[in-house]
Length: 326
Ligand code: NAP
Ligand code: G4F
Image 1 (cartoon, helix red, strand yellow):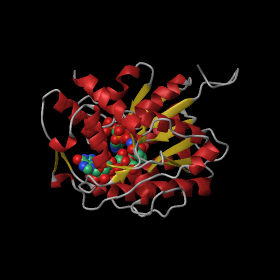
Image 2: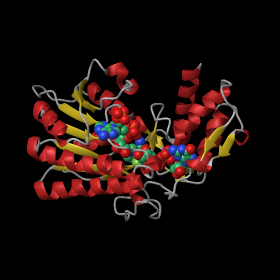
Image 3: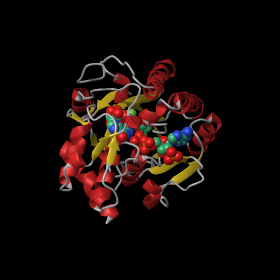
């Protein structure tokens, strides 16, 4: 099924970060709409394309790196994409405290390199930049597009640089470039380094007797967790509008890490208090304490809102990890 009118040409999309959680769901969605999908991947010593293994024959993969503007220029020159989704990033907030400079080079400067490449080789393409609720830091909740941005980590500072660069290139060169300020979104494809998947994976291992204990950090931090496949739809919707604008995307529901763990263990018939220990190594030097989205603008102008709530998300993730382990 395609979304195009009779005689309209197939659209081409380039996704950086195609092998990640969001890149894989976005690829599936765009293929379903009849797009020709291209993705940027890094060369690694260990093959790490498990999220896109099932669609690898239907997409076009290009080796490159968001750290190298030449790669970006040649790909844009070669494929002339209609839409570009910049999802590539060192996306782990905790790790960004350990490798702040590297995080700045990929998560921040990567955006600058891509914008320059787009300006030179694809000025008519529409660009989506993956901004984040981490930009808000500890500004009061609920957070919306007008909330002051006060980042609390090297990751968020790098994202803030990218966020403003998109605006600067939009205003200075007339690029169709916009940012989705997405709150946490999760799925069975979430990396094991993130707390939700770390928990649901551990639940499955405890059920199967592989271990008894899960070591976590700050159980009090609150996040607005949604379901990733619904969020990639919002990315695409932003690029279909007449004018480029930034949107906050989330659920408007917030829960602590402890609540997530408690319910995930409950779904599997376990008592979380018997299995959770706090390990100071999982604590961060600084923390965003409370995130909760105000999605009024997305509901009103984008006509986007999520269907999967907190409990629905935890059920999906625990079920998937239990199936995987059996
Ligand atoms: P993810 O699973 O960590 O995926 C990140 C992707 O970026 C991977 O494909 C990774 O490739 C790629 N990448 C990393 N460094 C790169 C480099 N130097 N050159 C090229 N590619 C590189 O992240 P995600 O959850 O899908 O999130 C997608 C984007 O949205 C990220 O920018 C993230 O910061 C942002 N975001 C995520 C959330 C969320 O809750 N998920 C919320 C707000 C914003 P490898 O497989 O080679 O590492
Ligand atoms: O799952 P997390 O690592 O996600 P975090 O830091 O909220 O970042 C994610 O969401 C952002 C959007 O708001 C994205 F921009 C970013 O790329 C990433 O996708 O941690 C969530 C919370 C934090 O407060 C953390 O301190 O969980 C707390 N936590 C407690 N124990 C833990 C752990 N986090 C991790 N990763 N591991 C733990 O053991």
